[in-house]
Image (cartoon, rainbow, N blue to C red; front, side):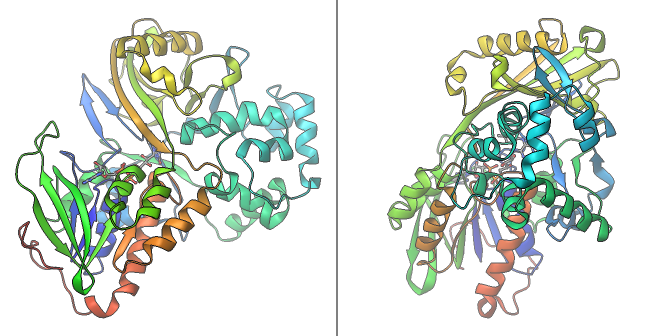
Length: 482
Ligand SMILES: Cc1cc2nc3c(=O)[nH]c(=O)nc-3n(C[C@H](O)[C@H](O)[C@H](O)COP(=O)(O)OP(=O)(O)OC[C@H]3O[C@@H](n4cnc5c(N)ncnc54)[C@H](O)[C@@H]3O)c2cc1C
């Protein structure tokens, strides 16, 4: 049996892909519900996303593990594709929300960018490549100039990573953008080439998706459709040790609702173990026997973040909310990082005469703001929203979710750190690490990485698992044998 520690989307996807190959798995999750960061709740007619609101799916693309997962789970009828208005993304510029030009002709015709920025873009194909690791900020300044950095890339980086472009590595955090320069010598040439490839292959562009009852549908359905007994919640893994004959001993405790320990330590023995947990949690479990990997994992920083869902009667918001949402460049001196127009994106997020916004505050560029009380944070968000979308204060409904460590930051040296972790972990057969601190933070990335890891494990353990078929609920905790 393979044990997966962590029942977020990474752990659940790995479990799904392994089990669909006939390999028995068990998922151990410390919280009450599976899903990790993906949690949806329904409150006062509003569909509140505590973590991700949507994710980018690329139908037909070879990497579209998410599409395969949705199909296998039978979730196609519950899938929601974002409203066409999602193509419009606003950016705050000079105190006003302005739509970001969405195509090359719109870019040159729009007054959003200065003529200097337009000239910089025309010159981009002629700029030399760099061969050393750069921060996103250095890369963008070099290729596209400061205006692109300040008004497009920096807000985009806070939208995805809640991160600081001066700190994040272009190779690690936006690998696909970096590859355009590496493979084509220019972002424009590379983007044009990729567009032609997609068209040639008849593949549609990516689409933002969610589900009829929000993102929580995805982890909940995986957990329900795995073999009965696969996912054990409220079970916190406390330690892990390599055991004789290539097995692993996992020690954990059942916890109460508030995280208190509810029983004595149980031992589970597994043939292989996958740590699908945040980097600090993985570091803690590895420290006793793989100290160097643990130390390197500890060096991966996380950005703090608060997500605030705000509901209003439609008439209490002046802006038409006709888009994906808006992002706030730091130059604009507004605390808010941005907000999604959640009820525009997907149906049934609010009643017909109401709207729902999801705002984000904090991030790597202003970590101390989360030291404020809930009340002060909410007041800040309401006041910034009033400036940006002319919403009345206070909101009719507010729900705040705080994360002290929300999103891992792929800072300079990240790829080197991941390589060093892999090298040390490779000394321990049957030990694997996979979660959003490597190879992409989006939900779709986590699912794709889960599928890849499952394939790797099948290859690594082909002889051991030959003939294994999952038929019945897994054995009781405490007495499992790998
Ligand atoms: C506010 C916010 C908004 C986001 N928005 C988007 C978005 O719009 N689109 C998008 O694609 N992505 C978004 N993301 C990113 C995405 O949601 C995450 O990267 C992804 O869900 C992480 O999944 P994971 O399984 O790797 O980690 P997690 O979700 O962190 O799961 C790890 C699990 O491990 C468990 N665990 C930890 N230690 C132990 C232990 N010792 N024993 C047992 N269990 C343990 C935890 O309880 C947790 O459930 C967002 C993230 C945040 C925080």
